[in-house]
Every structure is written in structure tokens, then in C-alpha cells.
Length: 431
Image (cartoon, rainbow, N blue to C red; front, side, top):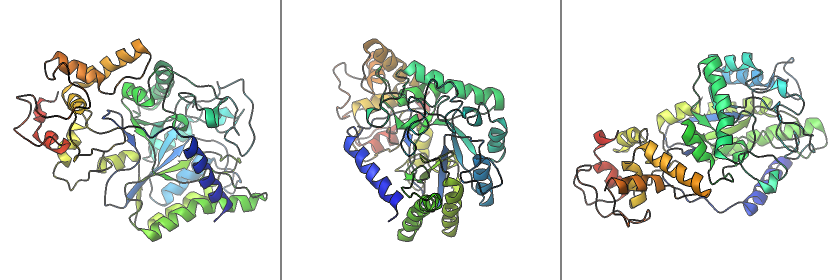
């Protein structure tokens, strides 16, 4: 096992030890998309923190920018990428560089892309040519934050970092990049990934609430492409080789063990330096694509992956697929982890999310959180509206099992599983 693989595993163990308890999933308009269910050999790759208009490190490509190198490699394999771009980190000062090899390598108080005091070489604001090339070649662009500032506190890894801390500040930052892409390129962003996956904010809201406001889906990943981790080798060439091998080896092993392993998966990549200021992705991406091509995979955008199936646990072969695909565009029928769990009993809170209009479900809950400054039940707004309409008993609790359905909205059924209730719902009434 290489030193970098050992380092990565050790780091994951440390993070797991200090991580918060697992999230209790709820129905949500915004879902965290890590993978989708499909038997086809298609997968996606996302490239964070670019575009980068500096050469690869080490530069073996005649001075081409790293983003150009990645685009050239994708084109060679007929692959489409999803570029999770930033706007401009040039406002993230005063700041100083941290220790190379640490999480703060590019800045103690803020992130700087592609590097501290070289912010004008990165981001969508400064790289019109690269953004136009990404779009012209059929790739997807997603929102990684205009200034790439974390949404809330992250004491363990980023204790010294400035954070946004509120729904309004996070939404304003994202909207600045969203507006840039609309105004300059006529491009509509539909997905986002929070900087460093920090979700909770100090005003009671989370990244899911921010994305609800902007109409985004939460783009995550299911497989780490590993190009961000530094090798412990003192020799630069040996370190680079170890980092490239750490990108290729897990892909090779996964495919040898199960040729269908990557079906529907999203692979995380880096469009920038790793923590040692090298760019193993410039070399390792080719190795990964060669392996995926050998096993018959097509690399597509996350948007195209979602068109195959927008769910993690329901494929096109299921008789309820088409109906659920239509419903998820109008109502919150999918859990925040992008699963449907159709065999589970339907709860009153979940039923309310099917019945309440989106603006009522979200707007009422948002107002309640603003008033209290605390996190409120995910179904609060929908249940409040449904009770007002006489669709629920006034004493109903969100976790109560459904034992009866409102008349006129459903076909007769005694099946109160989630599958049974959705199958009985008269979707022509959804509006």
C-alpha cells in the first residue's frame, strides 16, 4: 500500500472519530446526489475549485493551463466532466499561507484558488476563455461558491476559517456566481456543492435551505478520485508517482473486483493543486479514464447521469419509476439522501410534503426558523398548511404513521407504505 493511500485512510479514520452523528434523512426538495441507480456502465466525474489558468505541477504539457490539460484529456476519451467552479477568491484577505501539506496550505483564514496571491489566475470571474471552452465542449458547470467560504463553523479541520454563518449570506455568495454565469454566458446552474461539505449554519439553516432558495440540487460524490491528497515522499518525482498511483490503483482494484462497480457513481476530482502544490490529476485522470474505457464505461455529466435516473434506489425497470420521476419535479417525495425507501410506512409528515405546494412548505418553515433562530422540523411548513386546509388532524405529529388518506386526492387503497400511497395519488391534482 502506498504512503498516500495510508495517509488517506488514516485521515478518514480521524475525521470519522470527530464527525457528528449520522444525519436523520427527511423528504426534501434539495437532495444530496452521490450516485444514481442504473445497470448501465455510465458514471460522472466532478472537478472542484477551478478553473485554473496556471500550468500543471510539474509542467509536462508545454505551459498549458491545468484546466486545458484536463479538458484535452476528457476530449481524447470522449468523456464529459462536471466543473464545480468558484467565482473569485481575490477578496479573501487579509490572509497568509499555511503549512504546505496541511489543509490550510493555501490560506489560514480563507481558501485561495489556485493559490494565495494568485487568485487572478483562478475562478470564473477571471477565466472567460476557460469557461467558454468548458461550455462549448459540452461539459457541465456547477456552483462551488463565489468566494469559496465555508457556510458554518468546522472546528476540527478549519477552526481558524472565516465562515458565512447564515442563510442570507450563503445565498448571496452563491447568487453572485449564479448571476455571473447567467449574465455573461446565458447559462443556468442547477447544482452546487458546499465548500468542504460544511452544511450547518449558525442561524438554524443548512445548505439544503440555501439550495432550496436557488432551485439547486446538492451535488456530492460517491468515490474519491484522490488527486487532492499529498504523498509523504521527500523526492518530488517519487511523490508525484505515488499520488498518481493513488488515483489509479483504487479504480483498478474496484473494477477487477466488480466490473459494474462504477455504474451510476460520481467520482470526485480536483481542478487545482493538491495540498503539496502538485497536480497529480493532470496525469492520473488519464490512468483512470483508460481503466474505465477498458471496462466499457461512458463518463457523462452529473446532469446526464440524473437524466438516466434521479434516484439512488429506484431504476427505470420499476413500474412506479415514471410516476415518481414526474412527482419529484413538483413535490418533495425523495429523502435528502436521494433515496425513496418505497417499502417504508408513510408518515404524516411525509404525506404533508406530497400535499402542500412547494412555496407553502418551504416558505412557512423558513419563516419559523427565522423567528426562532433554531432548526425546525423539516415538515413544519407543509404540516402547518395541510392543517389549515383541513387535510390533517390538528393533533397530528409528523412521525405518526398514515392510517387514512384525504378523500378525493387518492384512489382507494389500504396500502399505506410509501409505494402504496404514491401509487394511489392522483397526480393530475398536483399543481
